[in-house]
Structures are given as structure tokens and as C-alpha cells.
Amino acid sequence: MPQLAQRVGRAKPSAIMVIASKAKQLKAEGRDIISFSIGVPNFLPGEHVYAAAREALKHDSGQYGSNRGADALLDAFLKHIEALGFTGYGHANLSVGIGAKQVLYNLAEALLDEGDEIAFAAPYWTTYRDIADIVGAKANVLHCGPEQNYKLTPAQLDAALARKPKVFLFNNPSNPTGMVYTREEIAALADVLVKHPDTWIVTDDIYNAMVFDGLGYHNFVFARPELKERLVFVDSVSKTYGMPGWRVGLLAGPESVAKAVTTLNSNHITSVPEVITAAAVAAFAGPQDIPQAKCAEFAARRDTVVAALNAIPGVTCPRPQGAFYAFPDISVAFGKSHNGTKISSDVELCAALLEAKGVACVPGSAFGEPRALRISYTCPAAQLQPGLQRIQEFFAELV
Image (spheres, rainbow, N blue to C red):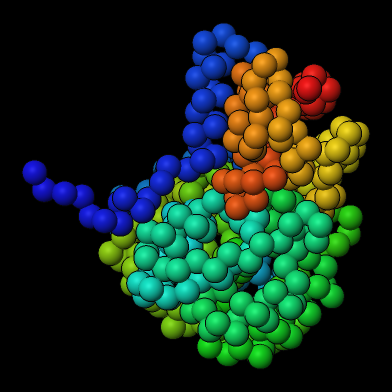
């Protein structure tokens, strides 16, 4: 019997999807489940997006599209990133993918040889570790605990880059913590990056429109423009526009990187379908009222969630300033029991919470921080307070 490739053994199912699937199964069995698990925005794009898709469907050519992305999509993305603060980019600096996840995988294939090192901070999005494992790269995980608000320090970055990793992967705003780096914090990290010219920089910043408290989105290249020659910015329509199922991601970076990813597209996906492309163009170029309203709504929800979590004795939740996640330190529960069930880890806590209270959260260990759990607070509004109350009750019942 022939064997599968070794890389398949390094690929693991998404821990997030495992929890979400379990919650869905329990709900189908009749359980009253509130899910804080999967990171979807849970709103739909504006009518102009659907109108653009319907119009494109009427005129669909049925042909292959550009490996780089349709000109209309590239034009719309250029205007989008210019509004963020990126300047001096053209079509040759861009490429498209089937969601940001696929763009990141293409970048790993384009930038990393087997055995190369990639550095990124923990807590990290689960896929970072998975992609590194699949391509055979060595991950240098930089641990940033709640005591430092889950943020990477210049000293940590300097020490990591002294090892000359091939790639430094950065995420701002953060999934899973919701933390956002200030202009000053980005500038301090950028100063360190300039000192280490042998490392590619990938900023996975798909929550850039979901920033609260007037903090604004900032990128290393804004602070140190000389980093442009080795920095790649990744974005998508998934979170900002309520379009995770449409699967459109893009990058902006050096021409050599964009060309390499475009070549990989020609072998992997060929192109993004015409109808999907039209919808993405409408999202970027059309009215921004829905994303802006949702950002304000998520900021208000953030306040509710953080207040509820920090009201639990022994639980601490650094205040997120973006995305739609909270990442409380729940290690106070370790060594205790709930209705006879011993809890010694984040995984056991999340399992007990789901079984006892019908609340689904993702263990922090999936993101490289086993003292925490992730709450995605985009559930239906009517479920938010009851879900938080169930969590409070669970902790109150620990002995």
C-alpha cells in the first residue's frame, strides 16, 4: 500500500473548527449552546456587494481569470491600501489568493525552504504554526504573556532577529487577543527590524479596519519606509466586510514576492472567479457604512465582555482594542473541580464549560498560550450576556 507524503502527517485539523464542530453537533442534538468559538464576523455585506455579484453573473464569461487578480480588483485594493497609508504600490506589487490563509501559505512556499526559521509571537493564530510545520520550517515562538498585554517587545524581537530567521510574521490587530499596537510601539519594533536586513517581514493585518478607541492602524513601513523592499502586507475581505465565505485575500509587497505568489497561483488556484471578484471590488470600493457601524458595535461589546470577565475573581483579561476577541487568563481554575470534574488545563476547562454550561470557547493552547481561552464575541446579541453569565456561574461553582 503506498504511503501518504510526510507533510500530511505534519498537517493538523484546525483546533478552532474542532470546537466549533462539537458545538454544532451538540446544538443539533437539542442542547442549548452559545458559541464563542469560531472567529467569524456574523454580519453580511451591504446590498451593493450582492448587486455587483448578480450583475457579474449576468455577464460571466466562464473563462479563467488572471493569476495575479483582475485589474478591477487590483485597482480597488490599491485605493484601499492607499487609504490605510501605503504609498508607491502598483499592480506589480500585488497578488490575490483564495482568502488570506491561502495567501499566507503561498508566502510560506515562496519565502521558506525546508529547515528555514520563521519567527512569530505567541499568542498566535493557529494557522501560523500549522503552515510552518507543513512546509518544514522551524518556528521560533516568542512568548508574550498577559503580564505584557500579549504584546511583543523590542528586546524580544531583537533577540529573535539576531538568529537571522528567514521570515518574521506579525499580526496586528491580533487574533486571538484583540490587542492593537500603538503608533509608538510599531515605530519601536520597526527600528529593530531595520537593524536586521536579512529577514522578510510579513504583516498579517486583516483586522486593520476593526480598531477601537481612536487608536488607528499602523504598519512598520509607515514608520520606516526603507522596510518596503522586504515587507509584505496581507489583507482580505473576510472580517471587515462580513465575507469570510467568499474567500478573497490579497497581498502588497515587493515585486519579486508578488510575482512568486502569482506564479504559485498559476499552479494552485489559477484565479479568483469573476463573480467573487466583482463582489470583492464592490466591498472595497463601495460604501463603508456597515464595516464602520460594526466596528463601533464590536467596541461596545468589548466593554461588556471585558467587564464580565474581570469581575470573575482571579480571572484577568487585558483590554483588547481591535478585532472581536477577548483572551482572558483563566489559570486560576487549574487544580480545581467543577461538579466532580477535575480541571488541570485550558483544554479540560473548555470541555467542562461546554458540557456543563453549553458555552463553546477555544483553549488558549491552540494559540500557544495554555493559561487562557479565546472568546469571539460576534454571536447574536441576545446570546452575549447569557453566555457571559454562564461563564461567571461556572467559575463561581469551582471548588
